[in-house]
Amino acid sequence: MLYSTTKEHEELRKAIREFAEAEVKPIAFQLDQNNEFPHDVVKAMGERGWMGIPYAKEYGGAGLDAISYAIAVEELSRVDGGVGVILSAHTSLGSYPIEAFGTEEQKKKYLIPLAEGKSIGAFGLTEPEAGSDAGGTQTVAELDGDHYILNGNKIFITNAPEADTYVVFAVTTPGIGTKGISAFIVEKGWEGFSFGDPYDKLGIRSSKTAELIFDNVKVPKENLLGQEGQGFRIAMQTLDGGRIGIAAQALGIAQGAYEHALKYAKERIQFGKPIAQQQSIGFKLADMATKLRAARFLIYSAAEMKTLHVPYGTESAMAKMYASDIALEVVNDALQIHGGSGYLKGMEVERFYRDAKITTIYEGTNEIQRVVIAASLVGKMPK
Ligand code: CAA
Image (cartoon, rainbow, N blue to C red; front, top):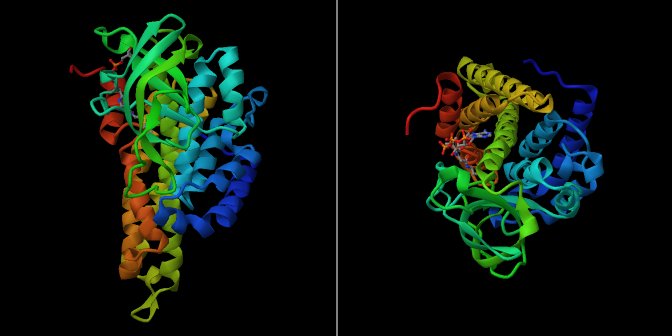
């Protein structure tokens, strides 16, 4: 598969880049230092139609393709990886399962406000004992008349507690493994649903991440998403798409760091000439630019496959794994090129360096991406 971007893709890139430079860049350091969620930025993105890029216009979306969505996350992350993941978790984790598996009523009630940016979405899968082993979910939902009673905890949930709508996974039939897991749409504000204090993170500090606590939360039966027992498959299929978003986030962070390093290397004079003219730095820049280009091909190609409705789970895992692995290399080289000044707070490369790390961890660690890719090549390995 090849990818190509169209004139419309590049116009969207320009619009988001201008927005990110004007509205996000000036406050990015403040958001990072204060662990502050950018409400005004999110509102402005909703007004521009960017909170529902890949969803149909009849459901409040922009009706664009998956490459457009990847470009949006990439361009926001080029300036602030936290803002990039707010959009990514909202779009591909909080909204996608409702679009793909929701009833008409669920789409009208939840997807339209999500896609219009009037509400924020999140995805509750990870638990203290169910991280990489997502099938080890312990949160339970017991049917009681017209409601399910939800009990349990979800940790590391991006966009909590800011999000309004949560797609939550819980065991409805114990003892039968992944086939006993179901998905539910849960609203903030329901009795018994509370949050832990937001985590104090290394990076992506403009995004919020918190624990979800469910204490006998009454979830109406009509908020079951898909069929009982379909939850694990819904989670896996959602993550296939989500990984394109995280790959794009990693690419954007690395692209931002590279551009700062290139500019610095052209301006910084040592031994009588710009350091960019010295082979050790020139070679680093060459490697960085090559890795970015390779990652971009992998991401847009996986996105194109998603748009064309051909199986793309292996390719999105490859894109996520590769883009996040090279992002760490690129931000490391970018900081190295800056020397001691790159190590200082307030320098963008210092923030990019911290923001990049999470991309090898969340939406499936890169070890899990290798499990997914290897299984597609050689079959599932015995547990
Ligand atoms: N699409 C559809 N169905 C899928 C699927 C996919 N991509 N992958 C697996 N399935 C199905 C399988 O076909 C199987 O169904 P059958 O039993 O009918 O054949 C069922 O799901 C179970 O599959 P496995 O036996 O492969 O499941 P497993 O328990 O071995 O786990 C795993 C597989 C890939 C390791 C999975 O647990 C996994 O992806 N773990 C990582 C979890 C993860 O990514 N968490 C991220 C949390 S969200 C987050 O991080 C958000 C954020 O902060 C921004």
